[in-house]
Length: 177
Image (cartoon, rainbow, N blue to C red):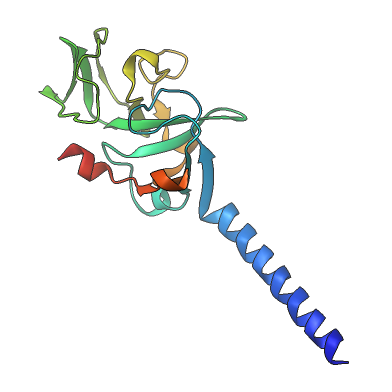
C-alpha cells in the first residue's frame, strides 16, 4: 500500500509541476532564440532569452526596450524600441534623431553607415523599432515592417540564459547611460 501511495504522490507532483510550467509558459514567460545578426552586438545568434509576456498589459513600451513581436504568422522579430506614439524619427548624417535630438546609442558600432530616413511621426498605438546591427536589420525603416502595432507585441526580453557562460540580464537603461 505504501508503494502505491508513494507512486501516486510522485505522479501528482509531476502533473502539478507540468501544469504550472504550462501556465507560466502560456501566460507569463516565453523563450525565444535569436536568429540572425540584426541585434548584434547586444544579442548574438543562437542565444536564448526569456521574454516577459505580461509587462505590456500593465506598462507601455519605452524607448530602448528590446521587444519580440509577431512580424507575420509564425515569424517573430526581436528589435529595439526607438520611438513610441507621437515621436518624430529621423535618420540623417548617419545618426538617429528622436524628436530632433540625436540619440546616444552606445550599444552600436559607431562606424556603421545608415541611409537617411524620415522624418516620420509614430502613429498612435504603434512603435518604431530598429535592430542594433543597422546594416543587416529588417526593421521599421523597411516598408515590409513599417511601424509595429502594439497589438503584435509578444513581450519584452529581460534575460539571456543560453549559453550559460553568457547569461545576463537585459536592462535597456544600463545601455543608454
